[in-house]
Image (cartoon, rainbow, N blue to C red; front, side, top):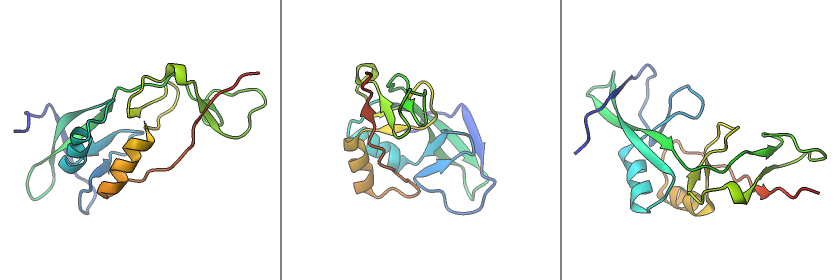
Amino acid sequence: MVPESEFFGVVHEKGELADLVSTFWAAVFLLSDRFRDALEQHQLSGWGTVPVSITGLASVKTLWLLTVSGTCGRLYGVDGDPVPGVRVGNFLDPAQWDGSDLFVAENHNAIFVTPRCADILQAIGLANLELRQEGLEPLIRR
């Protein structure tokens, strides 16, 4: 049973709803039941969902607002805090990562996932999901 929604959305774009729906806000995404079930069934950590009732379709549909609670501290490098002498790459401090499968950096709007999480999501073949391998590395300060 789906809990009663406190949030409501309206479809303004034509087309089919996919497993991952962008909301035109940075890093705010809605998930299908299929996507949410995959996260739950594989016991992936660092996420939650809130039901959203979507109108503007043939019938009201419930999607899930993705919340990411996993953290990894700050991102350093090209897309994060500058590091003297570093011109290529992004870096995390492994000591600041909480070990979650889905996580965000304090100073960046991307959602990061572990290789295990990426493998699971890619194997399922979710629609409208693009994963990009970044190869984040621990920062070695000299």
